[in-house]
Length: 329
Image (cartoon, rainbow, N blue to C red):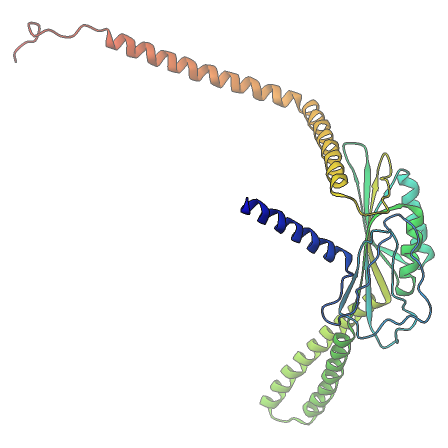
């Protein structure tokens, strides 16, 4: 009885703890401020924040904005961010549509209208007949929110994450190192022009070569950062479906999650059976030849075992040699 009461009490404590954790907003560990979250899980537009909202430039290096239960999106405004702050914006979208070709065309049109381009593209055509495509889209950073807003009106957004990374410290540190390397190169070239001893010339040329390599490396990294800052990166996955999944405004209960997992399992099992049947229909001749070879091998093994038993039986029934028949040498 005591053990049962203790177990019930422990269960109630755990339930209360989970309820308290679920009701509190996530807070950033470094700054103690509430983190920005949001995802257009219902394909609707993200609500605009007020113009006087301020996003502190000394924000955490990674500010993840993930799915909210109400389907809305909360994005910090970038109107008040100083130009000296170097930000990199990224997003990951999973879309679904029943009009695959139209959705592809709309994504291309939207990207071109916003002055973006496709860095990577790939498409797949599954055996079930449904198609999918993956894109790496680069749009100007100023059009980042516009792209996420409008693409939610073109397709059903099943999943969305956003991130904003402040790389100001790294960027300006690298820029300072580049300027130092350039000054060093100028001084080395001046010393080389005045050097007379061959040993000094060789040493200075080696130092100049190393400095030039350092300048090229730092310049390349800065160009890479400039590209990421000027153009945000959005990874898009487009999936063709028979029916667009229903939108749940409230968080799913445990029973609903189990039911959805059960339905997905049945659907995946049906797809597996379809693929298996298609594979068997495609390779029936190979399987037939393989089965004939296996049957032949089994028959040969059985015949060999049968002959071995017959030989052993005959050998066991042979008359033993009597002492009278033995001849003395």
